[in-house]
Length: 640
Image (tube, rainbow, N blue to C red; front, side, top):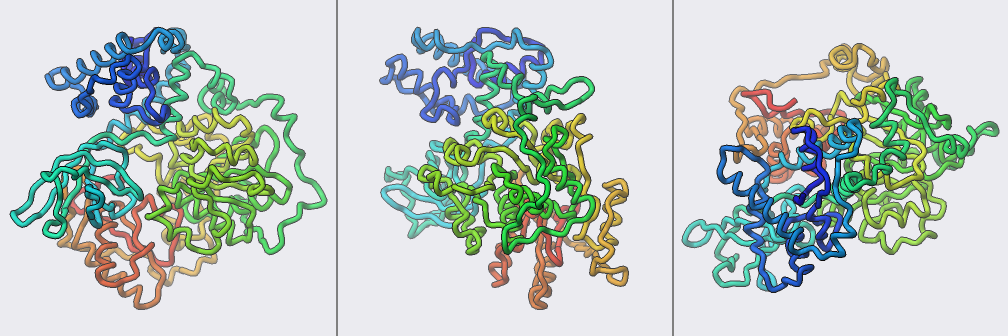
C-alpha cells in the first residue's frame, strides 16, 4: 500500500470504515524533502523520488500535481473528485514501485495498524484526525492585504500590511490585480515568501512586469495549502512513528499514559523512581526571597492553587487551575515562581499558546521584581511586525530571538531558573541549546483552555525530564482554536478523569459586582464571588447598550470576516470622548475585519490607535478601565 499522508489516511480508514492497514508506505517519509520534518509537499516528494531513480531529466508538472492535491473533499458523484483521487493513487504507487531503490525499501519501516489494540488505535486516531480535519477546513485561497509594492532585481515585491497577511511558503499560485492606464488586469504567476513576510512575484518577463509608476496593485491572492508549522510537523512525525511500530513512545510515557490511557477508575499513577528523585518540601528556615521583589497578596483560593503548584507529592504532579476572568491567574503564576525559585527550584518553563500571553506573564514577573528569566520569541513574529511589544527596556537582556539560538552559550544561561515561550517554540530544532542547561522539570501552561490537548504530544515525548505540569485557564472562556469547526477538539479541561484535579479561583476583581453577579449565575453556577471593595458600586451604571438601528454587517467576500461601518462610526465617537477625557480604554470586537477597519479609521483621524483595538482572542487575559465592545452582527448571532 502506498499513499501521500498515509498516517491520517490509516487513522481515517479505521475511524470511518473500521478497516486496518498493513505493509503501508508514506510517500513523503520514503522520499523526504530538504526539510524532512516540515516539508511534506507532494511536489517535493516527487522531486526527491525522481532524483532517487536518477530521473533528474524528467520534468514534473508541479502545477498539475498541486491542483490534483488541492481539493480536500470527495463526493462519489463528482467526476473531477474521482479523477483527482485516481491521479493521487497512481502517483503514489508509481513513486514507491518505480523510484525507490532496494536499500530504501528494505530500511523503511512499514505502516501497520494490524496489531494495535482497539483503545490505542482509537486514541491515536483522534489525536491525528483532530488537527488534520482542522487543516482541511481552512481556505485554500488567501487574500493578502498589502501596504506597498516595489520593483527590485527584476521582481515585484509586495509588503504585507499585517502579520496575519504575511506570505508563507514558496511557489504558491498567485493572482495579482493591477489598475493600469487601460483599466484593471490580473497577473497569474508564482509568488514566493521573502524577508519579513513579504511576497515576491517573478516578473522577469516583460509580459509580467508591473510598471509601478503608472499602475497600482489593488489585491494579491495566493492559492494553495499552508505548509504545516514545525510543531504540527513534529506531532505528525510522532504519530507516524507509532504507525511504524514504535508504540513504546506512548505506552512507556507516564504523562501520555495518565492523560490518554487512564485505568477505568481514572486514577493517576507515577513511576516510583520519580518519587524518589523529588526534592523535600522546603521547611524552616523560610526560603529567601530576592531583594526588591514582592509576592502578590493572595486570597484563600489563590493560596490553595499556589500550594498545589508548589507541592512535591505525587498527588500534586498534575495541577489544573480554573481562573474565571479577573481572578488573578497571572498573580498565581507570579507567586509560584517567586516561592519555587526562592526554595532553590529551577527548570521552570512558562508556556502559552500565543506570544502575547507569554509576554503578559513576563510583564507580571517584571511587576513583582523577579528578574531571573529569559523569554524565547520567534524572529518571524518579532522582526517587522511586533517589535513594539518588546521595546520597553525591561526586556533588555531577557529577550532571545530564534535567529540567535545557535549562538547561545551555556554560560549565558548560568543561574537562569525560568524560561518563557510559546507551545510551538518547544518544537524548535535548536531548543536543546536551552534544555541542556535548563532542563524542563516543571511546565506551567497559561491559557491552557485554548490549547488542544494533542498539541502537547511533541513536548511530552521529547522532554523526558518533565516531572510536574500545571495547567491554568478557563474552559468557560475561549475554547481550543478551531472548536467551532470541529466540536471534538478538547483542552485539558474537557478530559473527564482530569476534572477532579481542578482548583477554582473563586474571587474576581475585574468586573463591577453587578456584572460579575450575572456572569457567576449564568456561567459559574454561582461559585464566582466578586471583590466587595470594587470601586464601582451600585450607585454607578456599569454597562450601557447602544442601539445602532442603521447598522448592517457586510463581508468583502463570502466566507471572509464581517464588519459593520455604522457601528464603527459610533465606536469612534465614544473613543474620541474617552481619549479627550484622558480615560484609559480599549476596543474589542469578535471580527478581524472590524478590528482592521477601526484601526484604519483611528489612524486616519490621528487618534491613538496602536494597541487600542483587539479581537476577542487577542485581548484574552487583558483588562482596562473602560471597554468598548463592537458586536458587529445585527441580522444573525454569528459565532458565540
